Every structure is written in C-alpha cells, then in structure tokens.
Image (tube, rainbow, N blue to C red; front, top):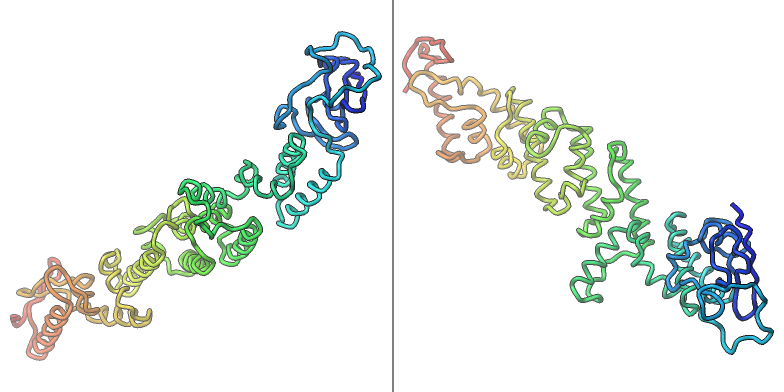
Amino acid sequence: MATGSVWENVPGQGLVLRDAGTSGLSVGMLLPGNVDGEHFAATGNMRIAGTEGEGTPAGSLQGYRPMTLGDSTTVENDDPPDDDPPDEDPPGDPDTDTDDFRTLKEVFLGGLEQIGLDNATAQSLWEWAESRFVADSSFTAAQASVEMKDQKAFKDRFPGIASMRAEQEADGSPAARRDIPTPAEYLARERLWATHLGKYGMSALGADLNTMVAQSYMKSIGEGEFVDRLKAASEMIYEAPEAVKTTFGDWFGNHADAALMAVFLDPSNEVFNDDWVGLKGDVAAAEVGGWSKMHLGLDAPVTQERSRAIAGLGWRDIDIWEGLDRLKAKEDLFIERIGEVDYQMEVEGVAAEFGIDTEALSGVELNELIDRRATRRSADFSGGGGAMLTGTTTGFGAANA
C-alpha cells in the first residue's frame, strides 16, 4: 500500500525522507542511496531500488539503526540542506551499488549454485550475506563461505555438519577433526542414498533420509554398511518367510514393516549407535528361530539363546535346514516311554543335533544318550514292544532300560 512518502537522494548523505506521508516515519531520516524508499516506508523492509521481492527487515540487518539529518531525532522542516556538503559523510550503511558488492553477490551465489543448494536455503543465506555487506563493505565472499556455517539456515539444512562442528568446538581442538564433509559431499550422499532407499523398497516405508544422512556422518557409517543394512532390512521385510519375520519382530522389534525397517535404518532407534555385527547376529538368530518353527512344526521357535548359538556355528543355511529335518525325523524319540528321561525335541534334541550345550549336559553327551535311546527302541521293536507314555495314553510292552 502506497504511503505517499517523498524521498530525496542527497549526494554524500543518501536517501533523505522529506515527507513521511502516511508511513509514520520521522522526516529527515536517512537510508542508503540505493534502497527503495517507498517500499521501506510501506513495509519496513530494505531492498535494492528497481528489484522485486520482500527485501530484508531493517531491524534484522547487523549494524542498522535509524538515522536522521542533524543532531535531533527528527527534522521539523523540509528546507533543503545547505549547498555546502558536510565535512564528512554521516555514519550509515554503505552503498551496495559497488563493484565489491557485485563481486560478493556473483561469487557467493555462484558457489551456492555449484553446491546444488535448494533455492529457499540459498535465498536465506544470501539475505544474510547482503546484510553483512551493508554493515561492513569490506565483507567478502571468502568470509561469507566460512561464516555462513554458523547461520540457522545452514544448520537446518546440514544438521550433520552442524553437529560435527559443534562437537569439534566443544573438544577445544578445531583442527583435530578431518572427517567433516563439505556441503557438496553432503548433498551427493543424500542423492546417492535416496537412490539406494528406493532400490531396496525403503522409501515407501517413510525412511527419514535427512536424519539418516546426518547420523551416518556423526556415527561414521559408510556407504558399504548402509547398503548392507538396506539389504538386510529388505530381505527381512520382503523376502523372509513369515515365521522368520514374526520371530524377529517378537525378539528385536515390532511387526509392522516400517517398524522393522527402523530397527535396521532409523537413527532415532539408536541402531547406528550399536554394533552392526551384533545386529547381523540378531538377524541370524531370528532366522534360525523361524526355521525351527517351520521345519520342526513348532508353535513357538527354539529359544533365542539356542538360536543364536546355532547361528554362531557358521553353518550354511542349507546345512541348518537339513539338521532340523533330521531332528524332525527323530520326533518319536522325544515321546518318552515309562522309565525314560523326558527329552524335548526343541531343547535336548536341538542341542544334540547341533552340538550345543544345555545347562545340564553338553551337546555331545546328549547326542550319545539319544543315539542309545534310538538303539534300545529299535531292539525293543524287534523284540516285542515296550511301554510308551504320550500325555495320558499308555501302551504296554517290554520294559526299557
């Protein structure tokens, strides 16, 4: 909305307000000579004359303060100034219509464009750099490239860099940390990892790319480990048998796909603070637990402790499956007869088959005991039977040793 203010560009002084109109400003106040006076009067924002946009709020410009001609805060009349120029220029904002300013703008904005920064962040940083120049005409693009990292717009866009710089400053040794990425490196990782997330089906589950990239730098998570995590998450979510997926969810996370993804990828779950080898061990244990349900026909998997012990043997998947199938074929040996010790297939049977220990006996000892039972059963069968106990049902025959 026009205010009807009248400004005069006075050489050596700047833009002088001669008539405030409806703006409420003080007659006689000064602005830099290249500022759009009417826009300032209407909005309180400073912008270069002849340009578009909202400009920058005057109160936010470092070094800005309202000024007027003369010693008082207002000028009561609008008589033109004396013909003789003052002995020296009144203190005020430097003129941005200079070669230094144009160089700053060209170099600084060119650098932001080369980095690939988004328009909103680039605009915010430029407004800051412009205000610094208005406050100090010696301000250069080289200074801007350093000082911009302390600006909120930069910290919001590059939280990983901001956090690493804060840690470095807290350590009191600014030169000690050499792994802080440049903005260009940071954005390149974002683009690459966004591709990986899409490839492995994680984008659709709401993966927080910004937080992942920030935490990856802070926790020194490289591309190799990140891709390994993606593969493991994708296999668990999209390829694992339901029994394996359910077991993993029961033991280490939730059952929703997004929650399962978070166990592998989401830094808010603090997985990036954990040992990746340990997480891979969790996956392997859940796989054994799930396979035990499938191959042994169990309602609940072999315990997490035994599953982890089997996974730790380093056997191939197919060898574990065959071991479970062999154990399933011996299922009758775990339906105890009168006088026999009560062995359970998912406890003593698993320990015997895979050579892992129970609290009472070693896997080797259990294997020998179960083999003896199989031999006695075979002899009893050829000699005329024995007594079998299954729940509440008893069959009679020759007694077992």
